[in-house]
Every structure is written in C-alpha cells, then in structure tokens.
Image (cartoon, rainbow, N blue to C red; front, side, top):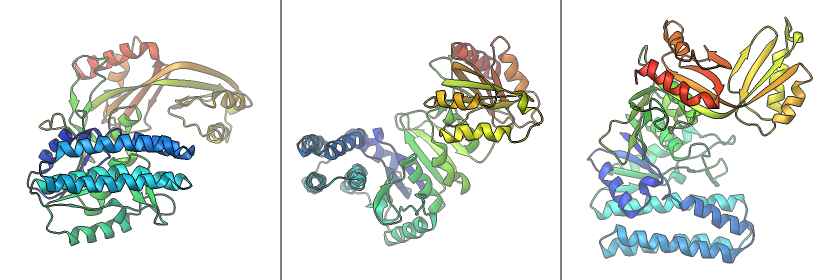
Length: 438
C-alpha cells in the first residue's frame, strides 16, 4: 500500500480537489494525507490572534468570511443535493464550534484546537466527494491514532497499533483519507507535529504500515540540478539519496525538510516527490540507494556571515574549540561550516541575531574578524573520498572565484565553498558548466 500526501495548494479549490480525486482513484488501495485548503491555516491564526486580544467581534467577522468561502466551495464541489446538504451541515457545525471559542478564555490550548479544524474540514469535504462519486472511501481521523510522547516526539508504537486497528476495522475501503499536521499529545490534548507538518505525518504513516512508497505531491516538479533563475538549461534530478536530499534542503531547495523523512529513511521506504500540475512526470525519488560516482546538484544559500578567531593560545592547547562552541551554544546560534588550523578557526552562521554578543565573547580568546554578505555554494552527489577526481573538478571550476572557506569530508555527499554573494552567479554557472556540461 502507498501513502500519498497533498498540500494546501493541491486542495486549494473545488476544482483542485476534483483533480486530486482523479489522481488517487486508480484502483489501488492507499492512504491519502491532506492538508488544510490553502490560506485556511493563516486565517485560523488570524482568528486566534483576535481572540488572544479579547476582540470577539473581529474574530467573528473573519469566521463569517471564511465560512462563506467554504459554502461557495461546497456549492462548486458537489452535484447532488444529498451531499451538498450533508457537507453544508458539517461546515455549519464546524464554524459554530469555532465561534464557541469567542466566549471563553483563550490560550495556546484553544488555539491548537482551532488550527486543527482546517485539516478536519478539507478531509471531510474530499471524503464526501469521493463517496458521492461512488468510491469506497473512509475517513480515519488523525486524532484517533497520531500521538506524541512526553518529549513531544511521535510515539511510533502507539501510532502503529492504533492505525492498524483502524485499517482493520475498515478493511473493505479502497481509499483511506486522513489529516496531516495534527495529533494528540501524551495527555490526550489536540496538538500538532510542528516540524514539516503533513510531510512528517505521511512519513510516520508510511513507516507504521511499512508502505511500498510514500508520495509527496506538490506544485513543484521535483528537484533541479541548479537554480533555473541563475543557470540556463537546468534539468530535474530524478534520484537522490536521503542524505543528498537533506543537504539540499538546508540550502533552501524546494524539497522535504530532513526531519520529515527520517521515519521513512530508517524504515527504508522510498519517498517520491511528484507534481500535481504535471502528474505524468516521474518526479524525484528519494531513497537509501546511492547512484555511485554521480554529482546530482549544485545549490546556494545567501545571507551567510563568516567569523574567524585567531589565537596563539590555540597552538597545542586542548579545550579551545569547546570554549568557542560554548559561546555559540549560549546564544542558540548554529554553525554551518567550520575550518581549523593550528592557530585559528573559521566558522559561518546564517543567524546574526546575537552576532555582536558572540563577537564580544570570542574576543576574550583571540583576534576576531567578521565577513558579511557571504554565500555557501554546495555541490551534492556521491562524494566519498575514494571517488578520486570529483573534488578537484569542483575546485577547478572555482579557479577564478575568491573562496573564503572550503568544507569537504564532513559528509560523503557534499563539498561546500564559502564565497562572496556577489560571486554566486559566476560560481553556479562555472560549476554547472564543469560538472553538468550545461
């Protein structure tokens, strides 16, 4: 059985919902994870904001407008009076439920309940539409099986047990519809999965049922081997290792968040990125298989700051790096790249919120210099050190570009260059020409 996930834009209108139904009704049994209709979660956040501010009139105005939008969607989606009336009654109950929170004390607990309604509405609408079209579809509420533990991490044993029971109870169904993003916490309260949302839900479900494949449907055609806005003739990347995908995700590639696919990675279940606008395209397959000796993509991340600390005290001293890292830890600032020598260490960060304090503290241990407006350019592929030649090929492509730092060997899948942002376009074009013959 496969698990298919569709985001908010994929179910963003009655027409889009109909197109999703065409994609999922191929006669194969599957679990379909749906997000809230695009724009709904933002509107529910706005409603919550009014309620925090003790302005029920403002909240009710937004609630009424959103309900009117949904009534219009219902009118466009269904053709029979039976399903129109059934869904309109459900919509009315849902919005009356949301309105009930305009009368009471409003806290984070109530906000999470309100935010959960977006997915609950969209999944009920699609399930009703599938049933109207004659398909054997059943809704399995995420709140009945998706749970986190006391550390706010998913509870895989609970998820597996409860989900198996729900699937067995509805064994005759052809399509199972469920919500993404929402769950219950260890205390039974409505909560959410925070990072990655619906993608994470799909990955957790896939691992729980040992799915054949997890499909993430978006309106983007997988991954490209470069930024099409900068480099001409980019081509989609059709296969990535999970680690390669994680590297590219950090660099802002329109791809899954690395934590989202961890359950699939550990359960060895392939994840396929597909395009709802181009359903026939093969998309990008992410798995634990590596294409030996192949460079997959080049990516770049802007707004990087480089910090260098030079100190003779570092020579043959132990504990120096620990002191440096503790400064970054105390200001909750992550380090991206790091290079060391006998008397110095260079680091890059993308969060400059506490830069002034970090530099002040580092000055206790050595001479500090800071370079702003930097950029990390990353080459991703099978870059194990035994694969002779790839690193020299990448470095030769950068021969005319000033490089502040190079990071190689921390991963089998990445070689990174820290350069000035002004040189990014030249660097990407040079790497593309050398590595992909574009």
